[in-house]
Image (cartoon, rainbow, N blue to C red):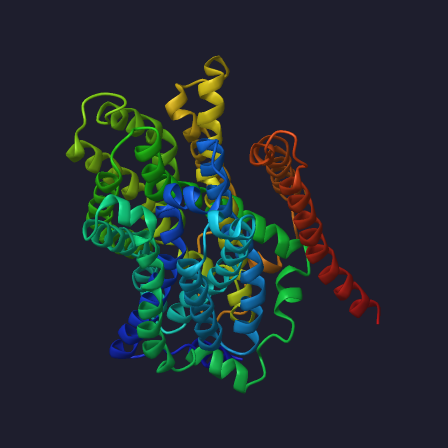
Length: 531
């Protein structure tokens, strides 16, 4: 018995330091480029609205563009399931090589796509299809990169090393802003608006090629290689990940207690701040992107700081502190920003940069430790699939739809100012503040601390624990309520007057698919038990 225990303890042997840094570099560069591809679209949302959607109502065109942006996020959980399954069956390396090629190809095609004036309604339809493809690819990327790095590094430094993957989303946005600013400054306004904006999309092909060369040289995760050699990998990772009420309870706890709050804090500080400054604060195009880029550059090292801190005091404490700070201070920071904008006071670029830096600092607190937390929350045999789903549901739906939700709320508050507890320019912040507070409360009460979990531990009591009916019922009710509110209040804003609500129909069809995904694995397990 003692010999078996010693053998189990020795199962995970971290790579040497040189290999670890090679793994981090290859994983981080590829993931950063995928984020670059994904966020180029959002960074240019205002311009894209004018090229790919019928004009007449500027606000509606912007909402339609943001909805197309959000459609990529909506596809992310499905990419998580599809590529997560490949990653758990075939290998981590293979899955995120494929996602890199898909993402880069879709971005390049967007750069070539004719506009609405040339091909009419096919322009927004093809654009939507490409965004869905990008979402599928991104859904398979993050879980693979985080898992791949985590399975190479020492258990007691997992927060520090995986935090480098956490910088990639911010660095991808930062890189997209730098490329946009460089291309924009090289031409006049007329040329930029006519075709110059396509260049950042086309440059993606070069970046993807560089990353592909780096990634092809990687070897498979040593932990996965040992598991596959000993026949311990899962043959049905999706069914195994979601085949019991206990595992669904774990997924929902991770979603509501960590991923949802992290998502809204991230997209408020790094993305909604950009659209808010441009559309509400009336700051000039180049100035907005310069302010965001400088704030991101100053704050990015703190991802590593808080990832390392979570190795010392725990993932849960750091993440919950970030959610609480964001819930309390986000609206006051935006009020301060308002006074520094042309629309609300005297323009002050330095003041705006300092405010955005504070918002991004909140992001680093919640986001720095979450990769380590996620990989520690699920067993190795289904880790790629299990990590990817709650992360991408949180970021794909709670975060990805934030610019749309917030813009729609600002529009409604402007039309009916008496119906909101804050001024119209801050109405969009009610959503992220509420979600961050819900995550703080639920995470504090329900999350387990994971920093002492071994990466090769297959017991995972939290995953296989008997579900608590009260907890599971609360989480299901919360999820159902969020879906109902989206269906009733958010989706109708995407439908022009007099048109059928196709977006709502699509949303309901998507829900039916998700319900089938929940029910079918359980039916399969029930039939196996009966046999």
